[in-house]
Image (cartoon, rainbow, N blue to C red; front, side, top):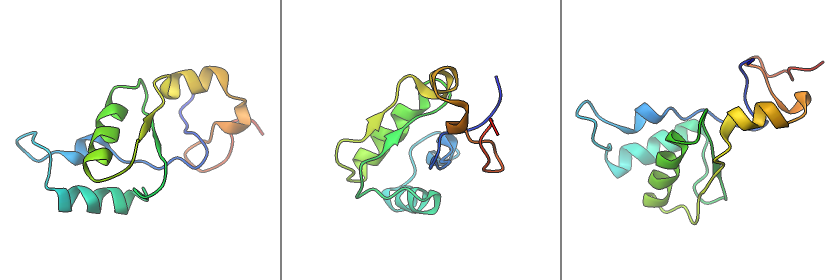
Length: 99
């Protein structure tokens, strides 16, 4: 399948949430990570990933940081690629996969 992402998606790598001992980083560090990624914890957010597993951790951490009822799209990008119109699958350079 072609690589890409959903419109308006931001990248927040799952591994960035953990320290070298695989423990969650401090609340302050986690807040900075979410802020730097462009996630506004005061707004509704849908977390997703390639298969739906790591998105659950992102949503869990967001809730720890005070986000109200974060959502997880369990179909993930795998389902999105199969079902979405090609113009809603954005390539790495920001253009739709279908032109």
